[in-house]
Each structure stands twice: as structure tokens, then as C-alpha cells.
Image (tube, rainbow, N blue to C red; front, side):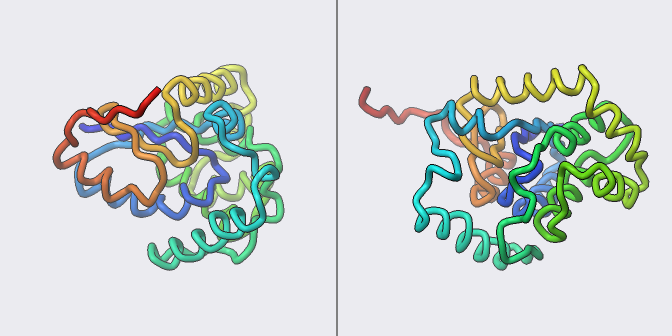
Length: 210
């Protein structure tokens, strides 16, 4: 089965907007997702990107406002009309729950989607233990067990490893997908991901000046 490596953060608007389409693509092409939740800020900074606070207001309003509105409408995704209230809170638990679910016989794709949706549709706090337990239990999962595992050394170590791998592979935002080692940044490139599953693109030959 072909794999799509999926680097993202549990609070990523564009990961949420593309999530259902991504799963449709996987189902159509018989591909599986390899979930790589990451700490997004260190990845963005390592690639030379600006923090949210470091961007101009017009840039924020366009990229984290108008683009969210248009793409959510285009993909028929329900979304709140403002930056989530608790968007800057810690993501260790939400990212960790996803990582903790991977070795278990559960639907990690559904859990990841539900967490993204809860944040961007229902405005939940991804650092709120009770809210995360509710998300898991709505899927028939043991939320307490997942949260306990999320706080363990193994999951924390994997989260850091995912983040460092993203930096090493020049990921610069969420979501980022890899198909056969070819990188696709942003849910607006999902149609290219689908094409890559059908027929890989020619190897990169373009060279920029040093």
C-alpha cells in the first residue's frame, strides 16, 4: 500500500480544511497515512518563516483569514469565523493523543480529523483534558488511556523526533505531505498529491542560483 507521510499540527487550520479531502484521496487510491504530528513553531522558524506575531496585519488577514474562508467554502468544510479562542495554548496533549493512537488498533485518521475539527469548528481548547477526552470518547476510544500515553516519555520522544525530522526534510508549514519522497506543502496541493499517487512527477531538475 502506498503511503502518504503527513506532517501537521493538531491546531492547523489548513490541515483541518484538507483533512476530509485527504482521506477521500487515500480511499480512492488505496493509500495510507503516516501521521507525523509536529511542534509547528520550531519547524517554521528553522525554515526562516515568521511567527504569527511577526507578520504584518494585511498578511495575517489574507492568509489566516480570507484564505481560510475561501478554502473552507470551496471544500465545504464548516469552520468558525475567527481565530480559535485558545489557539495559542499547548499542543502536547492533542498531538500526543494522535501519536499514542498510532500503534493501537484504532482509526488514527478519524481521531486526527476529529481533533482538528473540534478546534476549528467547535472552538475547543486543545489543552483541555476534558474536551479531548470527549473527542476521543465520541469515537468510541478510551480518552483517558490516550491522554495518559500522550504524557509518557515514548510519545514525547516521538513528537520531538517528528519535529526534528520535519526540520531535516525542509518542511516549513502545516500540512505537508510526502509521496515517494516528493514534498507537497499545503492542502491546496492535494490534487497534486492525488496525481502523484496515480503517476509520480518527473524528478526535480530545476536549479536556483546559490
